[in-house]
Image (cartoon, rainbow, N blue to C red):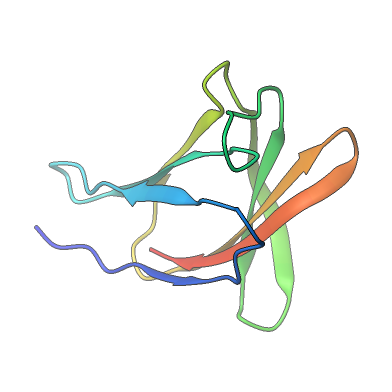
Length: 101
């Protein structure tokens, strides 16, 4: 079982990003992440998952709200596909990440 993950982002001062990609036994992949303000979890942030072709953000695939620990998860996802994650809190975009699973 193997998985390939590639991330492109520029962290802001004090920002910490923790993302884990976990292949399941059936070899499907998922994305598990945590949104923080650098120190504390950000609850009730909206996390949107889009498909992408590398040039443009495509169709919205899924959306979740972070829990009390600032955590979110998407899956199962197709391997070797490019995705964009956008994170919002109170209508303010906090982050945008491009991820290949």
